[in-house]
Structure formats: C-alpha cells, structure tokens
Length: 466
Image (tube, rainbow, N blue to C red; front, side, top):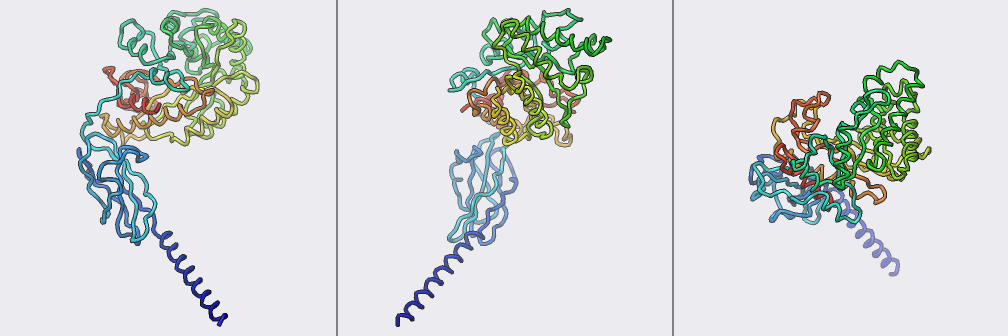
C-alpha cells in the first residue's frame, strides 16, 4: 500500500512539473512585437502599426510625448487593440510622439516592442522656454561655463549679440580671430587689435575667455608656411609665437587650445607643416612651451587643452588622440580635452559620446565640449536634403541637444569645464556654407534663428539640465 501511495505521489509530482514547464514554454514563446513606421500622419494623429505575434490574442498600445514613456497620452496607456494597427487621435500638431506595443495572450503579456518616433504635422503652439542658459546652469549643484563662439564685430554695446551674450553665456571663444594667421604678421610682429577686443569684452563683462587656438594647420601665416630657415629655426619661431601670445594674455585668457586637430581621420598624425618641420613630437613641444610661458609669467592657473573633432564615432582617431594625450599626461603638460562635437541629428550615438568622454574622465582631465552644433542636413546624404526646417527636424534637433547636454551635465564635478556652442544664429553658422560638408546652404544647426529668436534646440539645452 505504501509503495502504491509513493508511486501516486511521484506521478502527481511529474504531472505538475510537466504542466509548469508547459506554462513556461507558453511564456517564452510569446515573442515581443515589432513596431513599424507610422502611416497617415496628420495634424491630429497617425496610424500606429506592428507585426503579428504568434499565440497573441490582442496588443497593448502605449503612446507618449517622452521617449521613456513617463508622460503617456490619455487613453493610450496599455490600450487594448485586437488588430495590427490603431488610429491614434486627438493629438497636438507639430509635436513629437513615441509609441510601443506588447503582445497579449489569454494568460501572458510579452515584453515591449521597439519604440517608434513620429512627429505630427502642423505647428505646435507650445512656446519655447525663455530661461537664460547660464542662469539655469549656475543653479546646478555642479555648474560649468556655458560658452559661445564669437566674432569681434558682434561685440558692440547694445547689439543683439551683446544683449544675448550677457544674459545667456558665461564663456566665449573666438571663432577665428585669435588664431595664428590673424595675430602673427611676421617673426615677432603681432597685430593684437581684434583679439584684444574679444578678450577685453570677456574680461569687462565677467565672461570667461577660452583661447582658440595657438597651433592649427589651417591658420599658418604665409611668412611661416614659406619659412626659409632651418627646421630648428622654424621650431624656435613657433616657440616664440606661443610664448609671446601666452604672455600677452596672462591672467586674461583662462585656458588655451594649444594644438588643434593634429590627428587625421585614419588615426595617423596629420601631415602638416608642423609635423614635417618639427617632427612627431611637436604637439608635446608646443604644450611644453605654453606651460613654460605661463609659469614664467606667473600665470600658474592657466589651463591647457588639446582639441579635436569626430572622436566619438571614429575609433581609430579616438585611440590615436588618447595615445597622444597619454604622452602629454605623462609629461604633466595637459589639463583638459576639447571635443568639438560638430554632430548631426543622427550621429554619434549617446553610447558613443559617453564612451569617448568617459575615457577622459578616467584620466582625470577636464572636458570641454568646445564647438557644439547640430546638423539636420548631413552633407553626405544629398537625396535626403531638405530646403525647409520641418517640425520633424526641429524636434529631432531639440532631442539631440537635450541628449548631449544631459550627458555633459552628468559628468563628475572635477571633469566639467565648459560647453560651448559654435555660433549664435543659424544663418551665420559655418555649416550651411561649408563646401566640405556639401550643403546647398540649407541647415539650421544652432540655438537661435536668423532673427535672434530662440529655437526648440535652446529649450532642449535647458531640458538637458533637468
């Protein structure tokens, strides 16, 4: 009898275990749906679409105004749908939305699908946030400089540039007028007029001045580019220039890009006149001379940066830049890194940017996002160029500005220096008119439009500080 009872218990155990495994199989087989691009987008809504999931009886649709679905649209919080599409209604025109779905059987619910972005047509009546950038930044637990690239002719008292700069920004960089070919007339002969105006403007208005840049291959004055002396004499001329400029601006310019863009896109040293005449150690030499000049002038707080572009999504270049930086760290010559960030609404990704910046964080360096702008018409995609700044582009740009500011704001206090936007108005940016970028004059990469009005990108910047 006891044996029969044990056999009965064993049979019951195996039966229950088998049922449990069968139920588990059902859960595993209810796959996540794949959401598709929307159809029939209009001012008030769109048709959300997704693929069929085997064994599902219905689908749960979420629609949100935020990518993390923290702000769900009324009536679209797990709305049950029995079809493979749903017409979403009662939305606002010219607004960014996101949707996702889950599959549902009689007893189980799948995980979420991919997230689909959609912008309704029309114009949103939601006003932009008018808060001044530096006001919000200065209220942070760990504030940093908010910078803008300037031209000397913009810095006239009472001009729109002047008003906006004083209200919004706590740092300035000369867009071009503090480079070597603008200052150096001949050996030991300098024209300080324009650069002095920029520096004086910053100093007078309690705005930090970042020097850009002591050595750059595209700003070599003709007398030095065609220098007839020996290579050793050429090096001495570069040393003299760096020494004289750093000394002239002691205590007035708080930081310098010592060398700009010395690494080529393939990761090799860029083939410049400095490399050819001074050798592969020229970057270290330039930093050494800048540091010596600062120390001799008792400007011991001067910060020295290396500055370059496209390191986040170009691993060869990124690795080469950090190899160069490691040598400067070993020689105790560098304080920070400038990441230009001439980005697009498509790239680089959040993960790529974070990885790039975090390499500098681990080395204990200050980080300057030094030349930020955001293309909406990437020049290598001619078939996708648009002649108008659409609502979809406007909101995509806003999101990318928010993303990069959020990344920067999350950095440790010790690694923050400045986040500098490369210009004020869209119509004066270098991007729409760059032959290298192959734009037909159409792009809107900055925080202000041609009439000095703030854009959604400005609101995105502010939201990145939250």
